[in-house]
Image 1 (cartoon, helix red, strand yellow):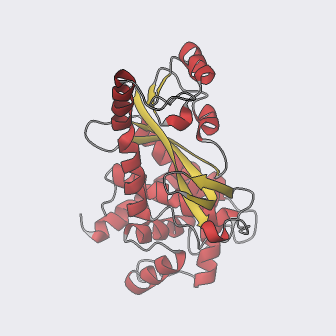
Image 2 (image 1 turned 30 degrees about the vertical axis):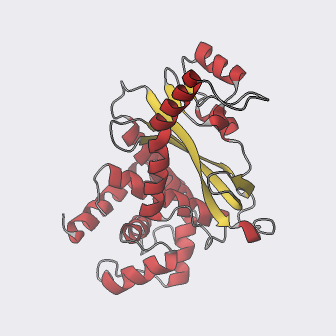
Image 3 (image 1 turned 45 degrees about the vertical axis):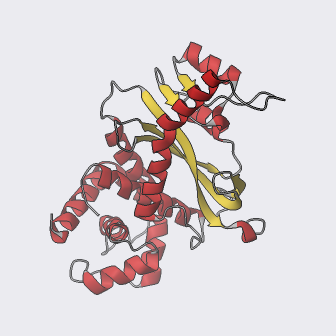
Length: 297
């Protein structure tokens, strides 16, 4: 598809979702309830900029103004554009949820799912103790895979396993960086039923796993954890742990793909809670659009 056709198609998709759902999250009570530069255009501009690897609001704005000014003649000045992007946080979040729900209907008979979390870093280790941006959402936590403390949030993901490819995201939820993966999963899986879920050792809890198995027919498979005083696993446990790790490895690949596509883990330019919500969910929306082949990058 040509760039022009993709942009038109993206705008039509945004308009469809906006008129059916997003308008309720972006409605205004002021006299300027019908701005000349529409909400649909603003969301389209952001997603199109991200699709062209412009990862900050300023670079998105410069890209559109330089190459697509005739497509968006009412494009406001940068400060007004940035303010609109933050104002539309709830609408962008609703769009991402709508696009996720469309993906989750694929292959309903597959019960194998993968789960894990990834850090979204607002401030790195040196500033993690003093950062205060979006304090209602963020706090300080430790990322074991990166061996670092950070200030921000975690994106928890439940994805449907697919043969020889990345898992298809089904549910995503944000939580402060300090929240334990298993505690957040208790909320994510509250309404789930009849799944096999492959996870890492952070999700080990015998009582919780037994309750899920009995009440919701959900089986949690994790690598075997060494018992206190134990120095190595026996061969059967070692083989089982290796098998589980191989099955759940694609969720790590999904996070790597998502970051390469959108730079979602690097949120150091964010300056407000609404800005962080818009930052994260615009990137999730783009990933869903790419997965569904609505646009290509």
